[in-house]
Length: 206
Image (cartoon, rainbow, N blue to C red; front, side, top):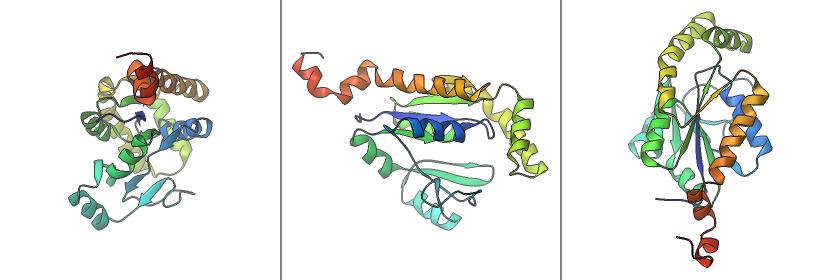
Protein backbone atom coordinates (compact mmCIF):
# COMPACT_ATOMS: atom_id res chain seq x y z
CA UNK A 1 0.00 0.00 0.00
CA UNK A 2 1.30 3.47 -0.96
CA UNK A 3 1.29 6.27 1.58
CA UNK A 4 1.84 9.99 0.91
CA UNK A 5 4.69 10.06 3.44
CA UNK A 6 8.20 8.83 2.58
CA UNK A 7 9.97 6.15 4.58
CA UNK A 8 13.73 6.33 5.18
CA UNK A 9 15.71 3.54 6.80
CA UNK A 10 19.18 4.25 8.20
CA UNK A 11 21.45 1.46 9.44
CA UNK A 12 25.09 1.25 10.50
CA UNK A 13 27.45 -0.77 12.66
CA UNK A 14 27.57 0.35 16.29
CA UNK A 15 29.82 3.40 16.68
CA UNK A 16 29.62 4.60 13.08
CA UNK A 17 27.76 7.76 14.11
CA UNK A 18 24.23 6.81 13.04
CA UNK A 19 22.34 8.18 16.04
CA UNK A 20 24.23 11.49 16.07
CA UNK A 21 23.71 11.93 12.33
CA UNK A 22 20.00 11.16 12.43
CA UNK A 23 19.41 13.44 15.42
CA UNK A 24 21.19 16.32 13.67
CA UNK A 25 19.14 15.79 10.52
CA UNK A 26 15.90 15.80 12.52
CA UNK A 27 16.87 19.04 14.26
CA UNK A 28 17.26 20.69 10.84
CA UNK A 29 14.35 19.05 9.00
CA UNK A 30 11.03 19.29 10.83
CA UNK A 31 9.33 17.40 8.01
CA UNK A 32 10.71 14.08 9.25
CA UNK A 33 9.72 12.19 12.38
CA UNK A 34 11.89 9.53 13.95
CA UNK A 35 10.16 6.23 14.60
CA UNK A 36 10.69 5.43 18.28
CA UNK A 37 11.68 1.79 18.60
CA UNK A 38 10.81 -0.55 21.44
CA UNK A 39 13.85 -2.13 23.11
CA UNK A 40 14.75 -4.40 26.00
CA UNK A 41 18.11 -2.73 26.61
CA UNK A 42 18.71 -0.36 29.51
CA UNK A 43 18.69 3.42 28.89
CA UNK A 44 22.07 5.04 28.20
CA UNK A 45 23.20 8.40 29.49
CA UNK A 46 20.35 10.90 29.35
CA UNK A 47 17.98 8.77 27.27
CA UNK A 48 14.33 9.02 28.32
CA UNK A 49 11.56 6.46 27.94
CA UNK A 50 9.35 7.47 25.02
CA UNK A 51 11.87 9.91 23.56
CA UNK A 52 14.82 7.89 22.24
CA UNK A 53 13.18 4.48 22.81
CA UNK A 54 10.28 2.82 24.56
CA UNK A 55 12.02 0.66 27.16
CA UNK A 56 10.29 -2.64 28.00
CA UNK A 57 11.28 -5.99 29.48
CA UNK A 58 11.53 -9.20 27.45
CA UNK A 59 8.13 -10.43 28.60
CA UNK A 60 6.38 -7.32 27.28
CA UNK A 61 8.42 -7.38 24.09
CA UNK A 62 7.47 -11.01 23.45
CA UNK A 63 3.81 -10.19 24.07
CA UNK A 64 3.99 -7.55 21.36
CA UNK A 65 5.69 -9.98 18.97
CA UNK A 66 2.91 -12.51 19.55
CA UNK A 67 0.28 -9.81 18.98
CA UNK A 68 1.86 -8.82 15.65
CA UNK A 69 2.53 -5.28 16.84
CA UNK A 70 5.95 -4.98 15.21
CA UNK A 71 6.64 -4.15 11.59
CA UNK A 72 10.12 -5.51 12.19
CA UNK A 73 12.12 -6.71 15.14
CA UNK A 74 15.57 -8.15 15.69
CA UNK A 75 18.04 -9.07 18.41
CA UNK A 76 21.16 -6.91 18.34
CA UNK A 77 24.06 -7.25 20.80
CA UNK A 78 21.84 -9.35 23.07
CA UNK A 79 18.98 -6.84 23.16
CA UNK A 80 15.66 -6.83 21.30
CA UNK A 81 14.52 -3.90 19.13
CA UNK A 82 11.21 -3.48 17.30
CA UNK A 83 9.24 -0.93 15.26
CA UNK A 84 5.54 -0.28 15.89
CA UNK A 85 3.53 -1.16 12.77
CA UNK A 86 0.51 0.95 13.75
CA UNK A 87 2.51 4.10 14.57
CA UNK A 88 4.43 3.96 11.29
CA UNK A 89 1.39 3.43 9.06
CA UNK A 90 -0.55 6.15 10.86
CA UNK A 91 2.16 8.78 10.38
CA UNK A 92 2.81 7.92 6.74
CA UNK A 93 -0.93 7.94 5.95
CA UNK A 94 -0.96 11.52 7.28
CA UNK A 95 1.76 12.47 4.79
CA UNK A 96 4.55 12.58 7.36
CA UNK A 97 8.03 11.45 6.33
CA UNK A 98 9.34 8.85 8.78
CA UNK A 99 12.91 7.77 9.47
CA UNK A 100 13.80 4.42 11.00
CA UNK A 101 17.13 4.05 12.77
CA UNK A 102 17.54 0.27 12.83
CA UNK A 103 19.98 -2.55 12.07
CA UNK A 104 20.46 -4.24 8.69
CA UNK A 105 18.17 -7.15 9.62
CA UNK A 106 15.31 -4.79 10.38
CA UNK A 107 16.01 -2.83 7.21
CA UNK A 108 15.59 -5.97 5.11
CA UNK A 109 12.27 -6.73 6.81
CA UNK A 110 11.01 -3.20 6.18
CA UNK A 111 12.03 -3.26 2.50
CA UNK A 112 10.06 -6.47 1.99
CA UNK A 113 6.91 -4.75 3.28
CA UNK A 114 7.50 -1.22 1.95
CA UNK A 115 9.05 -1.44 -1.50
CA UNK A 116 9.26 2.37 -1.71
CA UNK A 117 11.35 2.64 1.46
CA UNK A 118 14.73 4.31 0.92
CA UNK A 119 17.55 2.49 2.70
CA UNK A 120 20.82 4.16 3.70
CA UNK A 121 23.86 2.43 5.22
CA UNK A 122 26.42 4.48 7.11
CA UNK A 123 29.97 3.15 7.00
CA UNK A 124 33.00 4.10 9.11
CA UNK A 125 36.13 4.95 7.09
CA UNK A 126 37.89 1.90 8.59
CA UNK A 127 37.54 -0.68 11.35
CA UNK A 128 40.43 1.03 13.15
CA UNK A 129 38.53 4.31 13.21
CA UNK A 130 35.38 2.49 14.33
CA UNK A 131 37.29 1.03 17.29
CA UNK A 132 38.66 4.46 18.18
CA UNK A 133 35.15 5.96 18.12
CA UNK A 134 33.77 3.20 20.34
CA UNK A 135 36.57 3.81 22.82
CA UNK A 136 36.05 7.59 22.77
CA UNK A 137 32.34 7.09 23.41
CA UNK A 138 33.28 5.68 26.80
CA UNK A 139 30.07 3.69 27.28
CA UNK A 140 31.31 0.11 26.92
CA UNK A 141 33.84 -2.16 28.58
CA UNK A 142 36.70 -3.60 26.51
CA UNK A 143 34.95 -6.95 25.98
CA UNK A 144 31.80 -5.21 24.76
CA UNK A 145 33.81 -3.10 22.31
CA UNK A 146 35.51 -6.24 21.03
CA UNK A 147 32.12 -7.87 20.47
CA UNK A 148 30.79 -4.82 18.66
CA UNK A 149 33.81 -4.85 16.35
CA UNK A 150 33.30 -8.55 15.61
CA UNK A 151 29.66 -7.86 14.83
CA UNK A 152 30.60 -4.91 12.60
CA UNK A 153 32.78 -7.17 10.44
CA UNK A 154 29.79 -9.48 9.98
CA UNK A 155 27.29 -6.68 9.36
CA UNK A 156 29.09 -4.39 6.91
CA UNK A 157 28.96 -6.81 3.92
CA UNK A 158 25.17 -6.36 4.01
CA UNK A 159 25.70 -2.72 2.97
CA UNK A 160 25.54 -4.00 -0.61
CA UNK A 161 21.77 -4.51 -0.25
CA UNK A 162 21.09 -0.84 0.58
CA UNK A 163 20.04 1.90 -1.84
CA UNK A 164 22.60 4.47 -0.66
CA UNK A 165 25.96 4.38 1.12
CA UNK A 166 27.45 7.21 3.19
CA UNK A 167 31.05 6.91 4.37
CA UNK A 168 31.34 8.92 7.57
CA UNK A 169 34.81 10.45 7.14
CA UNK A 170 33.51 13.81 8.32
CA UNK A 171 30.28 14.46 10.22
CA UNK A 172 29.29 17.66 8.38
CA UNK A 173 29.88 16.04 4.99
CA UNK A 174 27.94 12.92 6.01
CA UNK A 175 25.05 15.13 7.13
CA UNK A 176 24.97 16.89 3.76
CA UNK A 177 24.94 13.50 2.04
CA UNK A 178 21.97 12.34 4.11
CA UNK A 179 20.11 15.60 3.48
CA UNK A 180 20.72 15.17 -0.26
CA UNK A 181 19.24 11.66 -0.19
CA UNK A 182 16.13 12.91 1.59
CA UNK A 183 15.71 15.81 -0.84
CA UNK A 184 16.17 13.58 -3.89
CA UNK A 185 13.57 11.08 -2.67
CA UNK A 186 11.02 13.81 -2.03
CA UNK A 187 11.42 14.98 -5.64
CA UNK A 188 11.05 11.55 -7.27
CA UNK A 189 8.06 11.21 -9.58
CA UNK A 190 6.42 8.53 -7.42
CA UNK A 191 6.89 10.55 -4.22
CA UNK A 192 5.56 13.77 -5.77
CA UNK A 193 2.56 11.93 -7.18
CA UNK A 194 1.74 10.51 -3.75
CA UNK A 195 2.25 13.87 -2.07
CA UNK A 196 0.30 15.96 -4.64
CA UNK A 197 -2.36 13.75 -6.28
CA UNK A 198 -4.66 16.72 -6.89
CA UNK A 199 -1.98 18.52 -8.92
CA UNK A 200 -1.27 15.48 -11.07
CA UNK A 201 -5.00 14.92 -11.65
CA UNK A 202 -5.63 18.55 -12.58
CA UNK A 203 -2.73 18.53 -15.05
CA UNK A 204 -3.74 15.21 -16.58
CA UNK A 205 -0.52 13.45 -15.59
CA UNK A 206 -0.74 9.69 -15.20
